[in-house]
Length: 85
Image 1 (cartoon, rainbow, N blue to C red):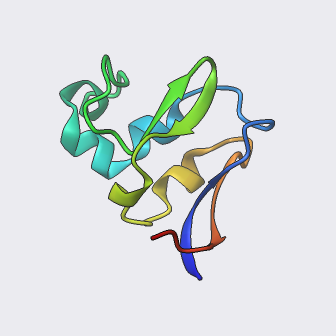
Image 2 (cartoon, one colour):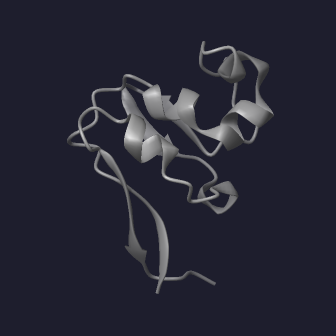
């Protein structure tokens, strides 16, 4: 088992704090780095889709926990997950 991001969509209210806080997302999008959020999917770790956070590319995640700390409703967490091949 390894540590990875786990999303609890039933808790998420789509604020996007985690998307903007993620340093990997900020490196991939000038809009995110400016605090606006992504305007398109440019290989982002996560994005808000239909009002709920969605992991787009969890393998890009650096597991720094910044997104977890930025979530006001604990809808995203770093937890042990099963490794996929």
